[in-house]
Amino acid sequence: MGFQSEFNSVCKFKSEQELYELLEYGRGKMVKKQFRVYPTGQKVIAYTPDNQAVAIVRILVSIAEINFQGEEITQVEMELVRRLTEEEARVQTALAHEMFFGEQS
Image (cartoon, rainbow, N blue to C red; front, top):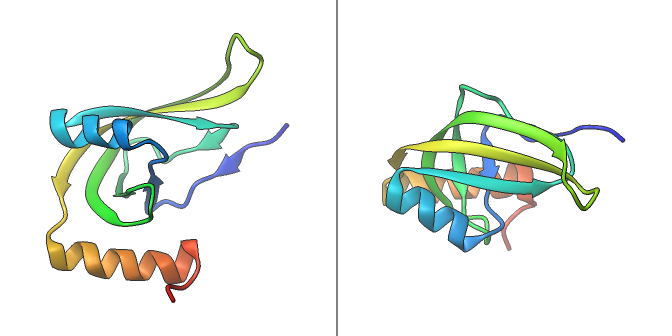
């Protein structure tokens, strides 16, 4: 059992619903499988499930726990700082593909 760490500049959503709630209401929660370490208090770039940069968010809380089904999960609460402009999103998406997600074809 170990912790998996996230990059300080990446907050990738796996669920469109979780991302929608963040963008619509300004606050949201994301649940990830396994224990992960998120940079509480820092601003990070949020990405859609298909690896597109969309916003800057601040990580408020990161809780790693074992749920009632015995699964290791991490819950991350965040607030929306602001949406990215079209140009910012394009640049951040290109950089993330090169650095984290694998180069774009």
